[in-house]
Length: 179
Image (cartoon, rainbow, N blue to C red; front, side, top):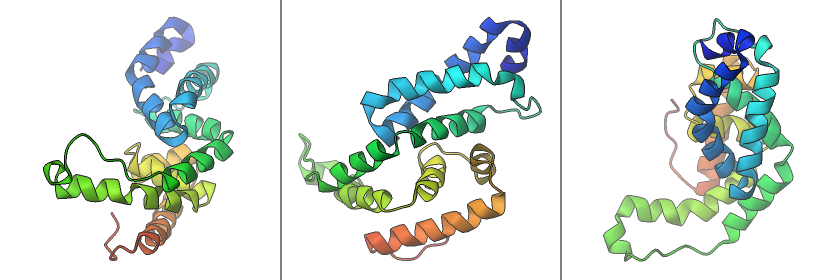
């Protein structure tokens, strides 16, 4: 494992960065916008490097740990995140260079939902938004999200169920079974 190796050979940590930096950067960019993504990514790996001696090496995947660090750093930017979501909610529907018919119904409906979804996300509490976006955008499993947020898996399941219900009601979508 690279993190364990980096305890004696610090330059080994570069492999952790190489493996996960793009994913963390994309997540930070989606949460805060491109203007903050570079800073959050750099800070995430700086904190991870400094705290690598505390990493549980029995865990095979560092992603939940890194997303937990990134989430804590993003929390410093909460106001910027909420401002971004509210701005996206007010933004007019973007029409691309292709006609709606050529873009496909699924893509067109997703684009039409974007402002409403941004408004719904802005209306969630920070804890609700963190959990939902770790599962939806970062594609973490329930177990990984629980690890990243340092909460029990039962809390993940119940909180996600409530959050998805809130979003469906806000977006006026039919009820579905949660994962």
